Length: 107
Image (tube, rainbow, N blue to C red; front, side, top):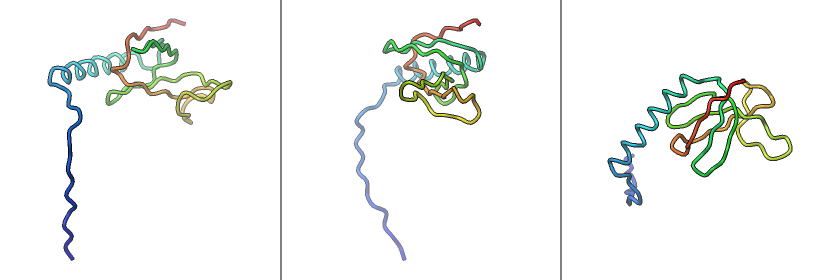
């Protein structure tokens, strides 16, 4: 029995121009290098929207940064729990191009 695949019509609603895509790739490459160098260090991150996040840099891959933050027991959790980290920590995933500043915290 032969089935004819359904015909799908696609309409592009956004496409990054070449220079924007190059800038984003450059940022991603630079951030991944930084993240590998400072994995398991305590950092403070400021996003483009002004949000401040303090935690331990866990990893960085495919344009995403993972940071272990203290779980907020008095409010809603801010990340995804993981059996590999302390019970008082949650993993928060951030998009690299949303980050404005990463500051290394010395303890």
